[in-house]
Amino acid sequence: MRLILAAAFAAIPVLAIAQDNSVEQDALKARQGYMVAISANMGPLAAMAKGDMEYNEEQAVFHASNLAALGNYEVEMHFLPGTAQGELEGSHALAKTWDNLDDVRAKHDDFKVAAAAAPEGVKGGQAQVGAVVQSLGGTCKACHDNYRAK
Amino acid sequence: MTVSDPVREKLWDPALRAFHWLLAFFVIAAWVLGKFGPANMWLHFWCGYAVAGLLVFRLVWGFVGPKPARFSHFLTGPGKMLRYARGMFRRVPSYWPGHNPLGALSVIAMLLVLAAQVGSGLVSDPDDFINIGPLAGQVSRATSRAAVGWHNLGAVVILLLVVLHVGMILFYRLWKREDLVRPMLTGWKLVRRDD
Image (cartoon, rainbow over all chains, first blue to last red; front, side, top):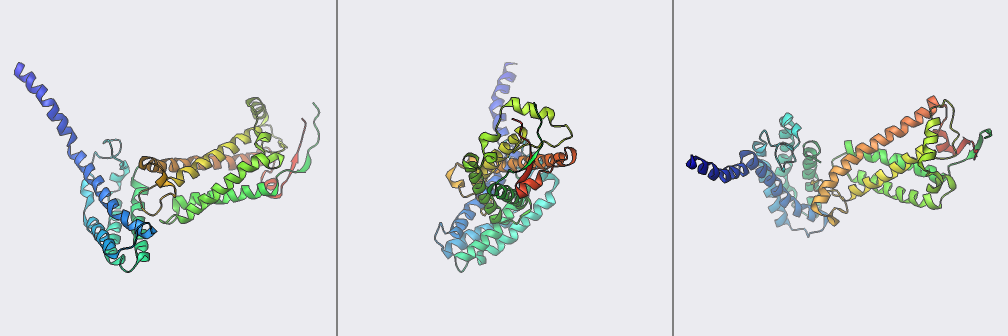
């Protein structure tokens, strides 16, 4: 009996840790990390487009190439059931995301297409970066407007 | 109490009328562009700046403008509002010389909500890198994110206020047989002053 109790108490922190690393939480961390990675590369491009940062072709191509790689990544795999806002703490994905996964996928494909064109698109001057940021940003907005909690 | 005959009077000054219709135009334009406009929202932004400018004008006009435009003229206590509300459903024109005591509430509500809407828009960052409010950098990341939510909620409240406004205009037109639109166009209104 004492052994069972001891085992039960010992299991509590293990369970808590398991909770912290549930597949749902990992999915959330993965897709939010994906967004952070996009942001980290969009940031410098947006700054160059606005003139807050000096245009540098090599640097622009570098970030645009990262975005192209991120566009190819199938982030859909991390939209697991049970990870919507209200179901999992920290999630900002609206429940209707899961009713419209085809549309979500189509919108991500739009980002993928825009990002694929970015490495070539940003070459040749600051004005080029502006056009690329516009087309990429439009695909961010299209999905945020519909599926991200406000 | 004697009831005098209503007289035609120049009630709304030209600046106030221009303000009203410009505000209507820019609020509707901003609303429609916000919901259905292109991904790049620069036009929506400029509509918002126009609304901001109009609100500043209205604030100043509320203190220095002609009498019917002044806050001190149309902001009344709850007693006067109740008295007005009681007689409101009688099927006769109000002949009210300005914003009536209840309408005054709606005026203030609209001005406050629009000011809040301009404020939340200025600091919004919707994470799309192309439609960042010009003052989003002045507030914390959490605030600029939350502002997107407030701005969205504000759009709903503005829609409700506009529907209420138009609904009341129709109520006065159809039930009380009083045209409130023409006075806002021409400035002239049939009014009665018993006090």
